[in-house]
Image 1: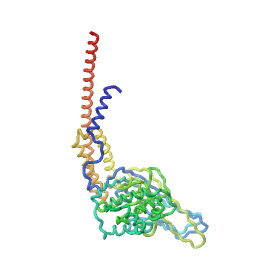
Image 2: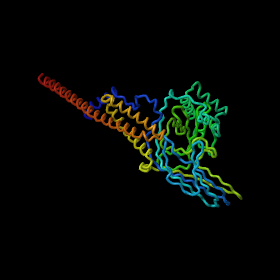
Image 3: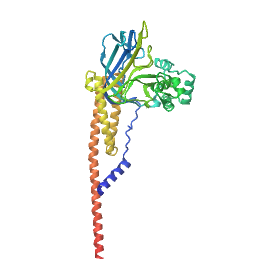
Image 4: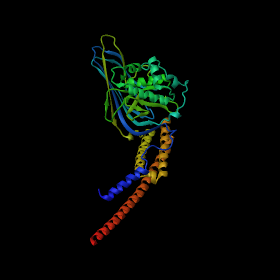
Length: 447
């Protein structure tokens, strides 16, 4: 490296160390912001269920019920593209908000099979909750949410003495619901070892045996929360690690409820707390009245002989285009707004690397405030399906984009001037050094 380049690099490093703050956290208070959505992605999901009669006798009154992935903001918008077969099928809902497709198949002969397929188009987000524990409200114990989701149920033995005693030991003197939930989440993650179970075991079994799969992790978290008087519930559906993946099994995670914030996600097998990524898709919330937690259910009767039905499923995910949501204006607009916000945040990071805290501090704070207000608008859009806020969010992100580009331009000019000044100083110092050297050399020759 040439000497003058080395001097420039050293000067810039010293400049960053002494004058710049690399923190990407916004400095303004975020009391009103409950959650932040990013990483929007559009996908196609194809859920295929196959029922085969492998017995020697017919199965009668065969019925297939499949909980469907539904719109669940702020996590995902969902449109069902195709249902096959489209005959003898109906859509049903229950009091918990679950929606099911139900096929009345009728008779299934030996060696005969029935194939059902549901094709979805989804727009999903990664959602990070921004919880201030001191802003969590007190529970209203007469409300339905509190009464329904603090009671014990199958697999969630929140009134069991061992569960109750364990919850008491975990919590200690802590009374804040969010801090209590975090203590419980840490306990479950530290206590259980992941091991796939062939059947549902429940919270108490998981606690006694210190192991389980996603079901046991979720059951135990929910049971301990309920034992502490925190409303909590199960979420079941599908979770992918990547696009173009095929699953044969579903997934389970949990949510706990906070006043002033609503339902907050927790997936302890993935070590997600107060966060859910954009590849989790829920089809069941809380315990269904008729069926257990599962991705599909088959019922039938046999009049004679030994009738055996074998079932299987696959769920495939692939990338799709936002243009497929053209007719769903709320989803289409939200996707594009979040994409613009991600671009602004990238430029924001670049501007800080370029010294915006020194060269354009006031403008930088304006960008932070605009992004914060934008996220508030997106929150209102998703919570209330409020298309009236779309233009407001558009204006906020356009202003932030314009401002951060101006900051980068300003920083580029000032950095160029600074580097030029450093070069001139180095050149000047080099010239003087040569003059001194030449003078000393001439003096040595004379003497």
